[in-house]
Length: 298
Image (cartoon, rainbow, N blue to C red; front, side, top):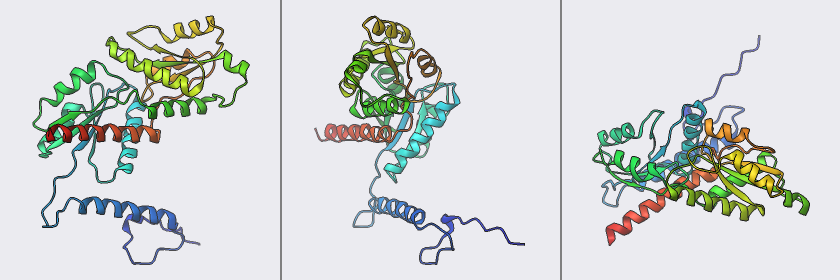
């Protein structure tokens, strides 16, 4: 009887020893590159006199939280992509409500670990009460020096992600003039009473309209107007019968599902774990760090 092949764990491989038969060299090279990157990042923290330099501030991604289990899974995968793009950076997650870990608990853990500084990047798409009040108030309760970065939107990387999700759902990149005159998009967002939130969502809608070459009307799942069905009807009254719904949500959840159900044509998936989202998180982190350095120098 032929013995079953043993399972090879690349983490057990010792540099310099021969690889077992059948091990794929590309995967091994990937592991070695990651180890090299992490080693380089650790060596960069050591000065010429052998003393350890202070590391970069921790990155704390602040998600809203959701009762939908898909939301936490999506955000966790997105954080893994952030870590892959920036090896050696301490990346943590904190929620405003509904999910663990809560932001207050994440900050308390950093405080207990004697972390000197952290940058909080809201996984939110516009300005609003959470960015202005909730997150800063939670951060003020710990000794860790914190800086709250700008929300993710508006930004061109969000527009590219929205465009990709629409194409994945069936949006045609090439249309006849007649098809284009009949097409439009509803940008479905969560909604907020904060007027700056509507301004930010409106800017994203305009950026997406420029990208697609068709009208894009912002609409909201709660609190603000118009609702997604109202926006669909408004576009139909203007002769736009091929209406797609773009999901301006970071992860699946009730609002995203309800908005998609109102689509008369196609409905795109939420922004999710697109690589552009991971790059945007790091961009906001770097922006906040640069502003902190400039402020200290001034």
